[in-house]
Length: 249
Image 1 (cartoon, rainbow, N blue to C red):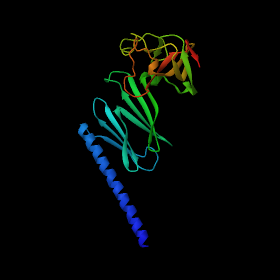
Image 2 (cartoon, rainbow, N blue to C red):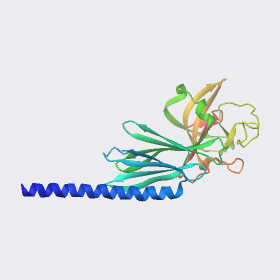
Image 3 (cartoon, rainbow, N blue to C red):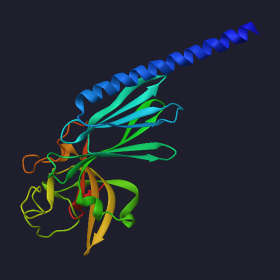
Image 4 (cartoon, one colour):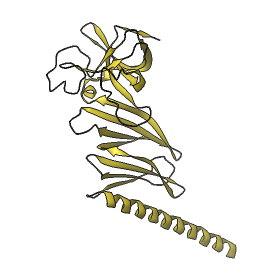
């Protein structure tokens, strides 16, 4: 009986110590955030990686956009796994939680958005999606265009046009302000022989348009400004190309 009581006291003591240690870590984190943010921060306590302990998401003002910080709780020790600029974020809570972080490009006028999707498993961060997109492209995607399985194509022409919408028409100066060819929807040029992933297809006026994901290395940056301008490793560009001068591989 005495041994059982001693063991119980030891467990309770260890639990209280871990809770106090966690509280102290949170106080340090929040004190640092308050030294940067001129407004109140947002704090979300949620079990991101489904290991039955609380993890922490902070959103606070740090510059023109906001900053987001994510801390995973690993045996009552907080590990910062995300720290970047963020205009807004969304948390999709299913069997596995996906955290979507969006960042508008500088300086509030650009239509390009950095879009990153994170997943958390067993105290580990996994990057599921990491790309830049022209905002209007979201509106142009329809559920029926989604493919059950992606595939890859290779460009057979040099400087092949990447567009922010699946059409060829004249745009106003304001609409095409961030395109690389005036009065068009062209946002980039593809090098010959580039391999790109096809995510969706759209048949429009007897032309097949492909919604694609492109590696930064496939872009000709001498002819068009590269919209992938953040230092996120392996970030890609999403946009539209015609299927006229590509071949499936």
